Every structure is written in C-alpha cells, then in structure tokens.
Length: 339
Image (tube, rainbow, N blue to C red; front, side, top):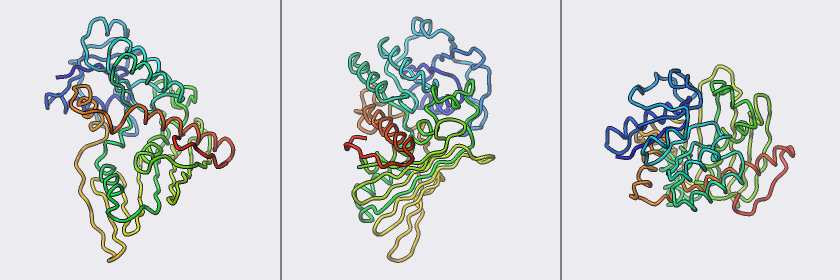
C-alpha cells in the first residue's frame, strides 16, 4: 500500500481525503500524515462550493506545521499538494527534490514559466508529477472522448461549456480574491473547461475572450475557441449570488447532440428519429479517479498518457493567451498550435 502525505489541509483537501478513504479500503493507498502552515486547519470544519458534507475523520493522521519535520520523520511514496496556487511551484519543486512523487492540485502554477520549471525538476529527479485536472477522470468525458474519436455520431459541429458558482470566499485568508495568489477566476475556474476542450478537440487555432473583474481578475469570462470547422464556447462565472455550483456542456455532432449537466446520466439526442437515450455513468468522481490513476502511475502499473504534466502546463499557457485577448477587449489571438 502506498503511503501519502497531504500537503495543505484546507477545503479542497476534503474531497481528496474521501478518495483516500476508498483507496485504503481497497488496499491501494492511505494518508499517513498531513502538513499545513495553520495549526487551526486540522481542527476546522471548512466547507466549499464542491463539498459541503461533514469532514472525514482524520484522528489517525500525524499532523505537522513544519514541512521539513514531516519529511524527516515520515516515509512517504508521494505527496498530494492542496495548497493555494501561488505555492504550487515552490512546494512541488521542494518535494520533488526531496525524492517524492507529486500530485498537485490544479491549476499547475500561476504562469507557464513556473510550469516548465516544475516539469524540469521532475525530470531531473526522475519523479512522477501529475496535476489534478479532475474532469479528465469523469466517466462522462471518457464517453465523450470515445465517441468523438470513433466518430460514432459523425463529425463534431460545435460545443458549449458552462461553469457557474457563487464566490469562493471560503479560501484560507480569502486567497481566491487576491489575483497574485489565485490568478483570478480566469485561471482557477475557467481552466477546468479550457483543459477539457483541449483534451477533447486538441489545440485551437485562435481564441477570443471578454471578461468582467470584480472579486478577482476576470471573475466572469466568455471565451470562443476557434478550430478549423468547430465553434467552441466556454463560459465561467463565479459571481453568482445564492446559487449552488453548476457545470454543464453539450457537444453537437452531425447525427446527435450529447449533453451533460453533472448528473449520473448523460443524454444523447438523435437527430434522425428524434429519440433521446440516457447513458448511465459509473458512480466515480473526478477526484477519486485522478488519485487512483496517479497511484497506478507511481506503482508502475501504467504510464501517464492520460494527464501528463506537459499537457497541464499547456492549459496554463492557453489561459495566458485567453487573458491576453480579454485584456485587449476580445481581440482574436492566433496560436501556434500548442496553446
């Protein structure tokens, strides 16, 4: 069984802890220790827009407020980084150099240059590095990727992605509101769908984006991604008041429309006979999927072809191009084929 250290014990760690509980029951991996700079983090019951259920029991964990002390005392197979984005590069580089494999929450870093440094250090130290782009591990998107590649419903003719939420005011010291710490909604929130669009359709030829700033940089952002023959739109907005988190998408094909709203079913509407079928999905969330996959990567069972760090870095670079367009009031920014 793999031994894991959880680095950062804030709100997003809740869903990670639930995943490890399942993996421990299967004899795959277990959390043995946790680090957080705030000693109160280990006693708080912090909720977020993703998971408002009760905290998982954690009495069995050994807690540290000094990362060097944790590394000196614990024998771990990999570290799971759940700290604010501005600390991703610093923590990842340190842990890689100390011989740990690293799973790091998204977005990979605040800028593409930092992503490149993280990849370089992982390579130099022959350690595995993966970023938590959790949508890649949702059964709905496995289905979409398969039918796109097989052209089961003909060619794709368009796609739309939407991600809406109330403001993430539950972050430690309100770090989401500080663009220097989070990169703003355009990086922290929008990157989910931007990464998925790349995963499904490849690299766009150009982007155009408009955004609105209030809480942080571009809290609301509407982006058009241009492909040869496919119009793709993605919107992200975390300024909604009194609403629960909501994410949805549809992909239009020549012969059908596939839609998904985060439920346990995916809907396929056939154009020829006007019928609709519901495809049941496996009960597996993306957080569990990504962590289970990384466990297999670390154990040498699979090679990381589904979610390599180089791809996560390219998603950050594409966000930088989208931000450039928003800064220039929607100017179409041409790309080089790699974001």
